[in-house]
Amino acid sequence: MTLAQDMTAQMTAALRKAGVRVTRQRIALLAVLVGADDHPDAEELYKRTKRVEPAVSLATVYRTLSVLEAEGVVQRHSFEGGGARFEATGPAHHDHIVDLDSGEVFEFNSDKIERLQEQIAAELGYDLVHHRMELYCRRRKP
Image (cartoon, rainbow, N blue to C red):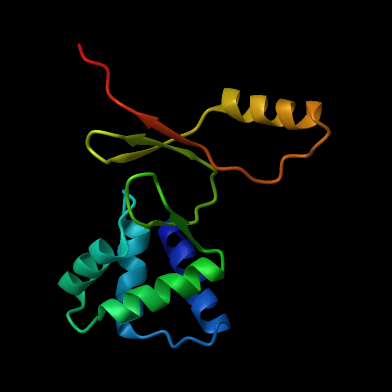
């Protein structure tokens, strides 16, 4: 099973667990969400899903995202200066850089930052359970 198939299966199971019907429209939304390589908002997810499943409604997108977020298989991000954006919860932790000029969001991993956060928590007498890091940046001019 591919990662995308596994993530889609987890989302489908989460919908069923929450008592939400798994319809053709929702399956199309899940495919769009899992296939997104950016962090789209609900309106963008609706537009993308509508291209492959014209019967989808904006209400279905919002309701489905709400359930998936509550079940922990979708993350909602509220980056400064913008509305809620969504991404499928993947197996690998990552942090984000938000380009203040373009609004683009980039994912990155840094073992150095992860170790430093663990060290800081330990020095203060804590075990790190979870964190989110968002860096707000502008590209350097050449």
